[in-house]
Image 1 (cartoon, rainbow, N blue to C red):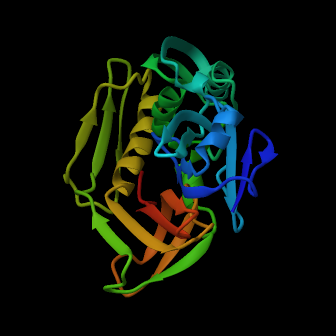
Image 2: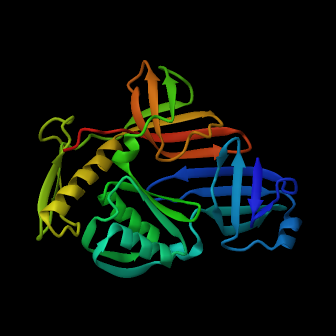
Length: 305
């Protein structure tokens, strides 16, 4: 395990007792929980908020993490860090009128002292109107991108939009065999999928269907979204239905340290269980001391119209 703190390699000096990172996409940012021995040495170093720390091991690295909580405890020094700097957590109101997704992300990135990048959705899509409602930039972008069919991932000081359909269509990063009664594997069905989702506002209305679900099965209407025309309502209906239905199946796999477990990565599952098929990793936890990894994935869905 290698540790870089504020640009300096402190691997040989640091005495690490605990080190767990979480790699995730959606409404939570990546995080790092690391505890050091030698508290006195850390006091002399003078760590502070937004100090940058990177942990890497066996081909995996956390990306830049920003310290946000520093806890001396029992002769040790614990640092909680996340992939968002402090500026990105400030809440505010802000309106956007006839702005593209790219323009909105650029504005939020500048406010957060971060960069941005977009994969798998049209960056030029115009949003007629949307409001940031006393939210952090990250929370606002997550809400917008979810309607636009993407997940938000914050890594290396960059807001990253990753299209769900785009990620689902990528080649699998790895294939995992899962057999019945295999230890460290949990397959869950989380409720029932929706056949139809309708977005309906005073300005526009449209519906989307999941053809793999029985007719009239858990149909829902969303009337609280700022869709300004039928085209936008239809796009949002398809994207929200996709995100809702893929969450109905969850797969949790525990393994030895696996650097291939990263959020928004495609994997294939083989074996003699209902979990066989194509999955998209939602989050992964890596323990650098115990050398263990745990990933949580959602089933890929390709039946939305």
